[in-house]
Each structure stands twice: as C-alpha cells, then as structure tokens.
Length: 402
Image (tube, rainbow, N blue to C red; front, side):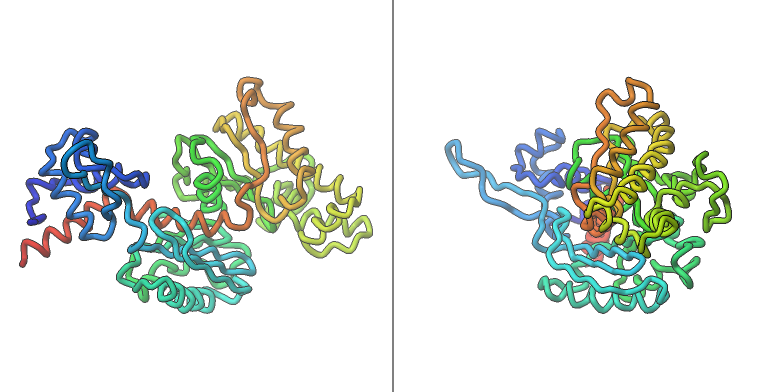
C-alpha cells in the first residue's frame, strides 16, 4: 500500500495515532477510527506507516462477532530499543529497554566519575554495543539514549555545568561524544531528575504532582507537576541542596556559601558530625550501618537531618503542592528515621489543606530508579509526536523518491 501520500498522512497524522497506541492496548482499525474520527482507509495507511517504522505491530485478532475477525494493533516492543545510562559518583549502570520502558539486558561497573568523561563514556559505548547485540538488535534498531549525570546539567545542550564531583566534565559535550558512535538522539539530564522519572513511572504512574528527593553525597530533588518534569529555565529546578537552613548559619559548604542544606543533612555531613562525637564514620554507608545497629547518636543525627530537610521541603510544599514526596538516595536506607524527621516538620509547618492527603514515603524503586528514568527520558523523546512525525516524513520522502 502506498504510504507516501502526504495529503492522507498529513502533519502529525500518524504520530497522533501512535500516541493513542502507546498505552500498549490492542485496538482494531474500527476502534482507532472511532477514537480519531478518521476514515478506516486513512487509519489503514497510517497503521502501515507505523508498522514500517517498527513502532506498531499486529496482535491477536479480536473476537469475531460473525464474519472475518478484525485485526488488532498495538505498540511494538520486540523491535526498537533505547539505551539507558546511569552515571553515578562511583558507578555506571546501563540497560537496553523496549519502547514500554522494560529493561531487556543490563550491565554495570564500578567506575569513578572522577576518571573523566572519555574513560566513562568509552565504557558506555563498548558495554552499550555488547548489550544491544545481546538482545538480538543492531544499532539501526536504537531509537535514542538517555543519560543521567551526578551534577548540574544544562538540559537544552546536555552539557554538565561546573559539576562539583566531576573533574574534567565541565561543559564536556556528552551528546556529541556518544552520538559520534551511536548516531541517535542523546538526552542528558541530572541524576535526580531521571530518578524522579523512574520512580513516578514505576511506583506512581497516576500521580500528577510529585517531588523526588535524593539524599546521598549531595541533596537534590526532581519536580513533577501536571505530570511533566519541571526543569526550569536553565535545567536546575529542584536544586534544594544549597538552600540555606538557619541552624547551620556558620557551617561552610563546598559551593562557597554557608548554612546550605547539603552541608548539614547529606551523608558526608552526617558522617562528619558523628566523627566529631567519636564514631568511626568515613562515609554515608557507615552512618546507615550505625543506624541499622541501633546506635542512638546515629539515629538522632539522621532524624535531625530529616528535620533540616523538612524545613526546605515545607517551602516546596507551599510552592508546588505535591501529592507525594519520595525520599531516595543512599541515606534513604536509614529507613523511617530520616522520613520521620521530614514528616515532623512538614506536617507541623505546612498549611492543613496542603498536607491533608500528602504522602511522604521512601522510594519504592530504590537503586533502579535512575536507570529506569534514563530509559523513560529516551522514550519520551524518541516517541514524541514530533519525532514520530519526522520518521514518517522520512518514509514519505523515500517512497516518493522511489
């Protein structure tokens, strides 16, 4: 069937149809025609275009009501893939995921981000190639790559900007480095934003207003409002780690200011405070272990960190009015003690209407949130109406040239 007729497909024609099918449900041509108001002949042309792109595939026929059963179509999850990349301070995790966001193959390595962008990204390229091959796909089946970095990212360019724990990465062109090999769109964001995407996709898909807070080496948050990740003008919305907390007015922060939330309530800050009390705490994990063993000093330190975090989140609740606040990151392993401190302040200081149905809870997805979110970052771009329309237009141009 000739799918090169621009007058039939029209701008955003096939892409509109595809957005309906992205929910994974199987539908017949008749159902699609009823949903869109388009003629069945037009639906047939658009479905064929999407099938040629590998985005839609036929499924089992619908039950017959007499006569020939109607064919059904749904999102294809057996052809195209995305690559998800989670780069942390001391680890890299990658996954090849299908268009529904389900990881097909995964790999990880303990690589210090301080080794520099070339070393880290070259590992991503080699491991990504191997994983794609392991799924039985080729680079031509790759739609896009999503990358999370442990520092500030200018989302419009994908460049890390003055990242404090990433020497050698400042303004390094991560998208260009990866695109030189994979030749697909590269989406780069900070790790907390992609964790927010992953947490919401898996644990809170019906929640429109959510704040994800990561408490680890640093402190940051990802804001989802109206179902959309909010990045702000330069991509640093949610950077709550450097909001001043009155209790720490004299405490220096690595950013150059004093009294930052991160200087009081991050994992290293808690470890430092406990060392001053005579405990052997060199890292966040040491603090967590003390808490798990019931050490009262550690429990009190974590609880106070929760209160400090609650001071800042109280302002966020008034500003954003979320339904859910999720606490993640390595310090979330301290369990209810951190969250109890947050709840103590937020519920006491916020307006009753804002907290009447507010849930403050630990991450359900845990360490998987970042790599799942990186996959969703890639999928949301690759399967957006504009991208699908561009792919359909390319088929249109090839068919017209033939």
